[in-house]
Length: 228
Image 1 (cartoon, rainbow, N blue to C red):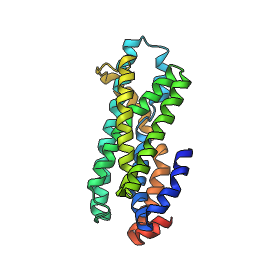
Image 2 (cartoon, rainbow, N blue to C red):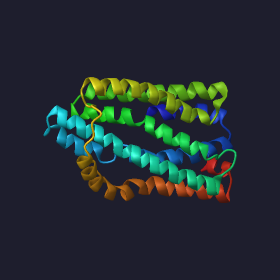
Image 3 (tube, rainbow, N blue to C red):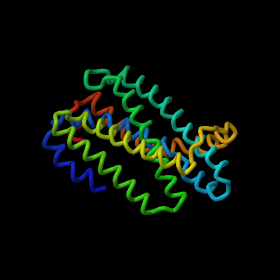
Image 4 (cartoon, rainbow, N blue to C red):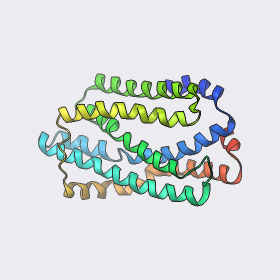
């Protein structure tokens, strides 16, 4: 991705080593939650898109949205408890775990909208949505950074960009009849049976990085993590 590389000199100009350490720790929590969002959905739903009628598929698509919401709820409780009992300082306030959980929820509709573009084989719309989303995220981060939000700009920029593209995604999914707000509990159970065994695989790498960063902060310093 070119946008993070373009913004990196701006971050290094405005953020101190401690700021980088704080931002890195919270990004590790965020990165740990990201794999929970579309887990299994793209593979399973893409095959069923061509097998089911639109009404039946929309029930499955809506049901698939519920699973990551449940995962994020559990994830937020666990990480909030971890922060409260270990990293509980002014910079690592457990309230930020709740903010990270909310931020992850705002990622859902954009990711499922991209999945819908894949199902419908619309590469141009997929590219425009993906690039536009990332461009807005990092533009918002840059503006908030130079306005004095420092490390918080990374997350506030993500939040604002996700909200805007969640609205766009909801409008598209609703108009294309991917959403109908009906749930299939049978499909939810079947979906969970498939994706639960995948959790250790998708969480292994971000979890190992988060543990590394936790040790650096707990037994070192924010500046040490910033260097890392």
